[in-house]
Length: 309
Length: 203
Ligand code: SF4
Image 1: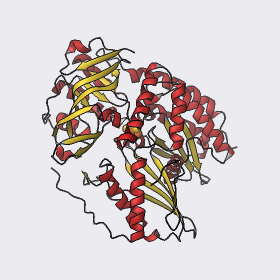
Image 2: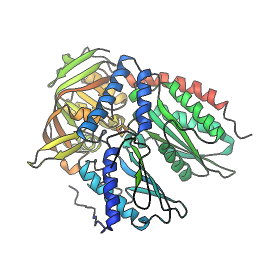
Image 3: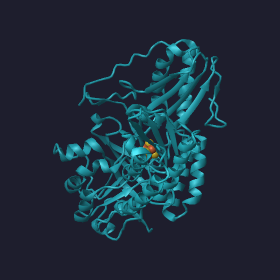
Image 4: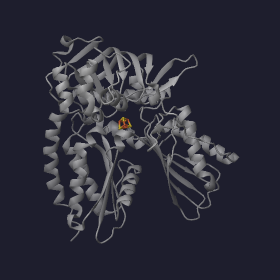
């Protein structure tokens, strides 16, 4: 039996920070059981197309499950992932200095209350912390948004099944965008099939491996039906969407008419000698939330119409 | 797509006619059993502390809540990727006599051999539907190897109407996912050619 334990000393939070933490705990409980509006809408659309008995059975199970999760107030999928936060925060947001502590404590609290699964395993020492936090977990990825006083944050519960297919690589320019095509398509029929389709496919293009990987994850934060502002990238999104759908993974990879909820590409500039490409997948249970807060902690939840904290 | 209702203990003849693509609902005992438990049985040669002969295992790491009286409640349970257990499954079935292996996605040649030689089925539960599955768990009757943490503990569940379980490997060793994959790969190659022609953005 493992005797290793993870020490967590909660920091004393200011009253406003405590208020924010409590709001986020409430919101994350909702995120763990209720899919964002764009995803729910897409799943309804797909269920109307997948009408063979087996596919229909899977889609009706999914619908029933989401209703039960809401009714019983439980996480809709048992794999509540490693919690990831992607934030854009202005230097004048009053709680900037306390943000890391707030988010870490949010995860500890929500893990007890939701409850979320204990998914933080300390690497090399190889033990589960039992708190759902660990070294570098939750993942907190911060972008500074000038001198604004707002916080715009995504929270994502990244399950193991859909994290497993993640891959990134640097191609030579000679391989071109054609190289990206094979890179993405091959992963669909090998790993994608086990990532609980219908999938949200995130593709990142950049100069290097970590930038491409990060872009691909940020692509999963975009709505399922969103379109890249770049015309060529938008064209590639469309080609991939048609192409991957044509493979016909169907729900759970059991075969069907469709494979994806959407394909999103996020691109940044590259080095003349490299094309970095990354791929991240989101499963049908794409538990992504977004909260926008002003300096007084007035909030908006653009992905969850009608939800109040 | 035919529908079957099975009850543990399951005998060879109960599953002899069930084929890939059929649907099964289960009454009886299903035990969660995943990566480390398989490794312990197969590599470390430790006996599984739960008798699963004629019963079912579930590749899953659930969320379980301990109630005030010390008993456990299944909050959410659903399968994890079965292929991670492929390396161990043939030996595992041989050692334990388990009849149903429930998980997510396909498994490989070792499991095909096990299903054929020792008369077992691999089935998939549509993953992500963890609350639905949890409501089919009547009671958690035992928990073993708790040192592995919540996801990896062997949770022994008494279930009713647990399903839908879609048969992915049958007792002939036929494999639904491998069959599908051949077609998926053919279509994929077709599309790679087509898309590649339209993305020559570097001129
Ligand atoms: S891939 Fe998604 S839906 Fe499937 S088990 Fe993992 S978290 Fe749940």
